[in-house]
Length: 150
Image (cartoon, rainbow, N blue to C red; front, side, top):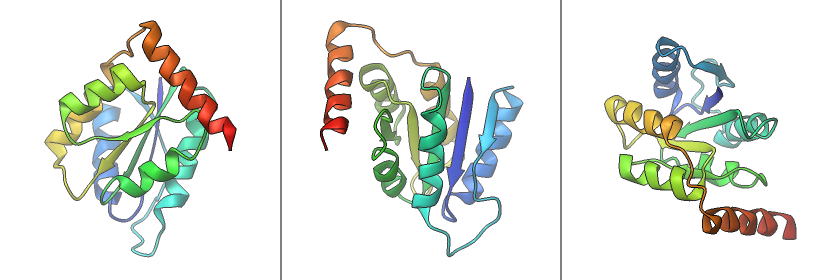
């Protein structure tokens, strides 16, 4: 498993804490930026990099994208067919998104969650397995079909 991570200026500090946390757990993580704090940077640049990296191998690669609200990076990531990104606020929500919607990118709202909550959300994201029932697979196929329709 490889985790690709990126954040704009609002998520920059949280991203660096997450990288340290995941390194301590011996999880392979690749930082896709920003590499220095820049209050003028743009979240679409970073969410795009993560989405494109995850799409190289959706069975082995996951992504974490961070901005102030989590909304902007989520919108950008979900523009890429094959990416299923959800904003994480609560453990139960991330469990549901991973089990039922098979998310492969987690968007984090740095302005609304603390680091302890962040660690829980990431652990759940990485350790929860998607449900294999036919209805969940069918729904993912429907999402993929929608992505190809436009």
